[in-house]
Length: 237
Image (cartoon, rainbow, N blue to C red; front, top):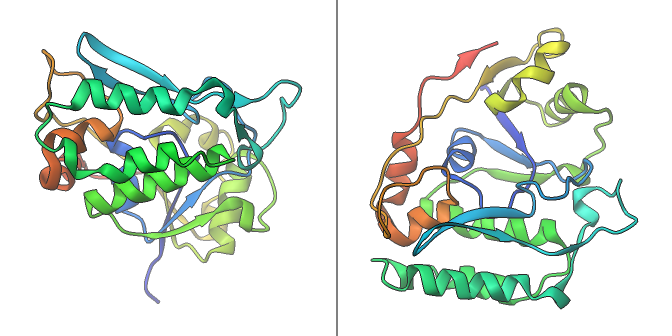
């Protein structure tokens, strides 16, 4: 039986390079949108490189009185105009970038005023995957029936989707190792190892761990190879 590698991550806003390398090494990538929304997290913000340095771009959302809402239910507060501001930041910061004109759909998506944050994030991620030539099967956890929390939820998702191998972000290692349920399910657990590569940037010295949009606007068709260059050997649990 051929193996099936699954990775699971929350749908984050304009993710960094390592996020896309995780997708690229997966047969199936699950957007973990059924867990609780975390305000002021990567779920609603990321950094681009402005003329004077990194700039935070945060999506305004309706969260008052809704502390326990899942990511899938979070609605964007378009009255704050945050997405329009992000379009202006992109234009102002990258209009002199070599490939500024190559990803017009990013601005189109931002200006389309989607209702839900998860819809926005997923659409942006899929658009960026197209430019990076990153492919996988994509599923939202909210469409699955897997129960549980933390590592139990992860292993149940993997089981439901027939995974033989779970590729985990290294940041999840702490809570997974507290009670690792993967061996008893016959699922090989490995951790993603990624070293941020350098690439051409505007505006002074190199800044790492920005949104991958910074890479796309500066390197264009070469961006996929840049992402892949940061890949290191995965490590077993």
